[in-house]
Length: 185
View 1 (tube, rainbow, N blue to C red):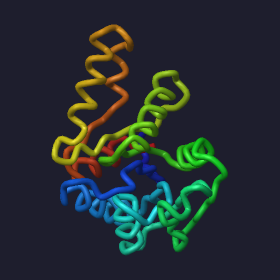
View 2 (view 1 turned 135 degrees about the vertical axis):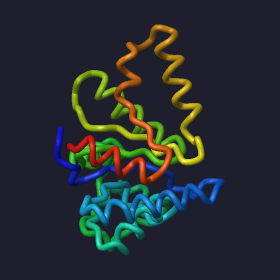
View 3 (view 1 turned 90 degrees about the horizontal axis):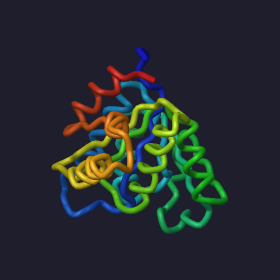
């Protein structure tokens, strides 16, 4: 892979989290994607870190592709002013559309939904169903426990060591940008 990604799927919280650094990193991610001409693909919400990433990408002139299921339109305040706004029937369809329209996956701090999305694309990678880069933005060490769990899974014999190799980690948005440029898609 040598070309830079054209579309980056960002999984992140629909809440802002407990630390201001999470929202700052989300805004910086949106700004960085727009500055590189990379389209943001995300869950189409206008709340929490999702909203921060999208508004920053839009402010930077970036293209935005949001996907939201009908049942979350009100709860996540569907952001209808995106470049592309897709409404799906189910969460499964949402995840599929997001993934299929992205060249790389980035996971910012988030909750159960972000973990679900992360493990799904990681499992697909483990099974050889794709070769898209998967990057954790480890703002203030948020994902350290997750990385320890993955290491434990490997250490306890439930996965090959290659599993860890499918996950790249960036401590800052600057490192994330460097990784995405190097990885391409």
